[in-house]
Image 1: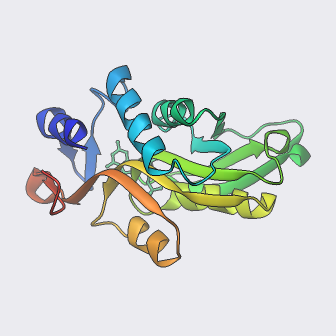
Image 2: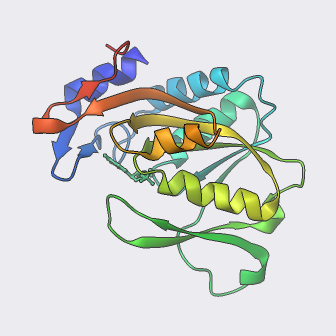
Image 3: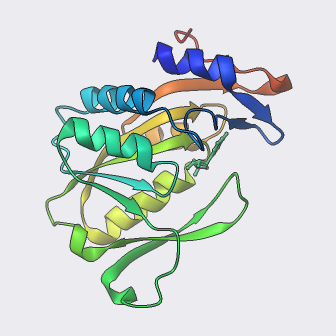
Length: 193
Ligand code: 5GP
């Protein structure tokens, strides 16, 4: 998506550890118009998949997931990262190691918001090692619901998450694919400007 790629070029900062900081439009200050366009594009790519719910993980996935759900006309659920002290029997849970924060989060989704015939689209801001998407897939497997794919705003394709998911047969659609952050320079995959 050209608009997204242009913004990454203009204001993305490369941090040590192959982390791209995009807090001017996605991870701290959020651009509603960009999020709307990301949501519309992900919805377009998955329009024939019969999506009934969009799932993400709090907090940075919420903006693109909400806009995707709006465009598809379905609810959005964000997995919570904090342990609930009550009603744990009523939750599906999984552990997700955070690449940027170097901690393991216990994510959960309430059973009452999952229906047996759900077709889930997973949305997240970044795809790196695939931990967040895999955690949500684990919850979907526990719940016995179908995952139709993953819609990602920025995929770092030099990290293994996207490749592993595609090899496992998961449909992954990314709006910008970054080939390298080496030397502090952002390079996009061929075919992306
Ligand atoms: P994964 O679970 O695929 O290893 O990493 C995805 C999660 O880690 C995303 O939800 C995102 O919050 C965070 N993340 C991974 N890489 C980056 C990055 O380069 N920049 C930012 N801002 N977040 C990242």
